[in-house]
Length: 246
Ligand code: GTP
Image (cartoon, rainbow, N blue to C red; front, side, top):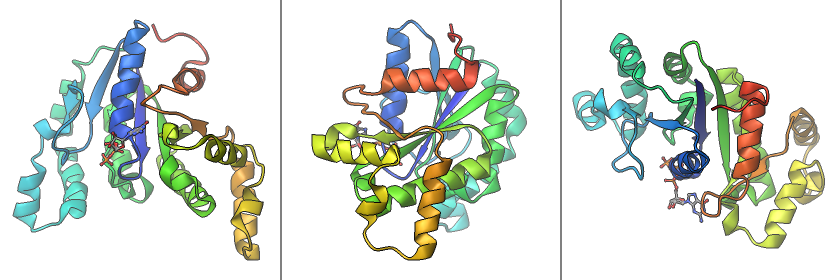
């Protein structure tokens, strides 16, 4: 069994991609289940096979502890960890080869807090996992935001310590010129020029960051399924060493 976590800033397209990627796998006769890890989400475009909302009521957490939505999410994940035995047992009912995990938009859960890593480990157990980090094209088309998103991706990767694939989400919203420009940045071209004047610290930071990229961010669109074949191949290479998941 392989776990694929979809992680990214709020609204970067995680939920939509989880749904579309499941449909894409099912179309190719591969079985894929979905885990919803967001206790506060109100409606979902898919039917989750495992849903944290069955274990925690985030509205109740907000009221009981007098919290706002962000801190309520953090407390909810902590409370979920107290139900680890029950969760572990229920997860045993999932039998598909692929488990797609839709995560909350509060990315600090994965970038800065141990509870995100602990809960992910609870889900994954002895199985292998990979993170798909969504860089929202709407933000990434601006060079400074592009760098910031890569730094955030690095934080998540460092914090979780699992293999990670960067994707540029919603590329159907970019013009041909914008897409070409952003793609060229990932290939190590033109990014420093696009940043304009930057101080020595930032120059070195960007240079090291780009050198550390194993694979350029992959352009994908959940609307057109652009990049889905490449994303599948990349995930497969990381998780199964190129073997099919069937
Ligand atoms: P949070 O859970 O709130 O963090 O959001 P999310 O990351 O799950 O994003 P979601 O899938 O809810 O998408 C946010 C918005 O972007 C929705 O209006 C989607 O319809 C839209 N969207 C997602 N993916 C795409 C895409 O590939 N192309 C286009 N054009 N819109 C998209």
